[in-house]
Length: 559
Image 1 (cartoon, rainbow, N blue to C red):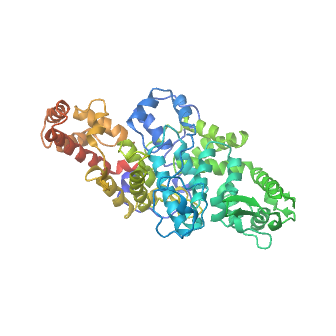
Image 2: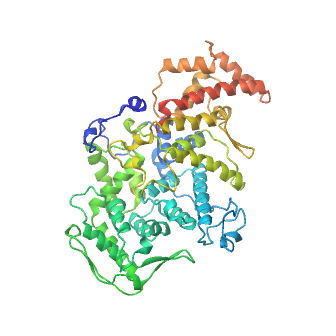
């Protein structure tokens, strides 16, 4: 891809498939273990793909390990986080509702409510809490994977409108993010949020609802590109298998009602080998038939494994899959996936340790999603947020970040459809969809805002401290080292020429002077007299201008 042409918003002709992209990258590397350099560049690449941003401290931490050790450390699931709390008031909530008994600062996740206003406030609380988890993530792939599975098993909270369902949806994806995919599909099938979102709780024998049965096959397991593929009759048969599952609103638990279940046998098409799911009528019928249905679907091993591996690849590696990548990466990973009984972790381990993942053509080639941009900026610059215990101010600051990402077209908890975010599946643009005439200015405004005036609410300031960031670098008193070390963290594309960096240095750090000591002296004056505000402002203003300029260049949008 011509990155600069893209950022100048040159329009490409519509194309029907990935085939016209074939050969553009000429990348032939495969899954052999990576044995190349292990420098800041490679560590930052790994972290920006598996986490949100690459903090200087995290880069140093993982650089002390081998590639294999670093990947193994990342492929762990973080402990379950403390639940969201009530940071909102009771305005608009009906009298007598259980929500009114929950104290400010206490969690609401164990108290069911049918009040629409209460649930709207809870869903908002959940989104802000989730944003806080992204900002405060540990050195693990957990949060990046949870968001990936949320995209894959997409639900829209504004449609199901239930705080407890939203919280448990996150919990399910967190718990099983690195587990068994087949079991994950089963659990998602009976997830509170999914049952509400795709009308599974209304699916009864007298009126089978096909919504989930269709997406189970088309979006969650098989994909729609296989030919031959499942049929409309298979959708209807699967819907009949899933009849009877419903929700007890008093306890927010999923239950099976045998009286609402279609007890006849369900016969599937030749795509499934004419398989039959035997009808049952007892209390275990729902579980037994669901297991039979999933066994039948997962017997299409090649189709399921290749479909899921391609989605993983697009999320973590690159968004175009050409012929050599299909042969050298997708197919062997899919073979590993199905031979490993659908365990997710081994697939990711092989991919992230491979020469293909670290191939130079796979570095700096993804456009940051809005969440990657907004969260990654805060993490890499170590923007200071209120402590989680200061829940009112913490949620207020998390809200600012969450709203910014949503304005850039990635609203956590609310992907635009059951297909997830189009940037991961919509040909021909794919990730290029993140950048348009509306979103690019918003990206620049966000970074400009945080590096200059900052965001203030209730006397709490959210702002990049460029001086503190510079102090984390090895030699900030040397303007050349300062620029190079900053770019090693902030950029993934080493596209600035030495001449460009010299010009930037002269104009922004040396304020038009020629000699490097104009910066070195200013920095030393601040270090020697940290309480001298004049000395501080001299370096602070120059660094603000430097980092603002870096974040406004196209390269900052690449991961």
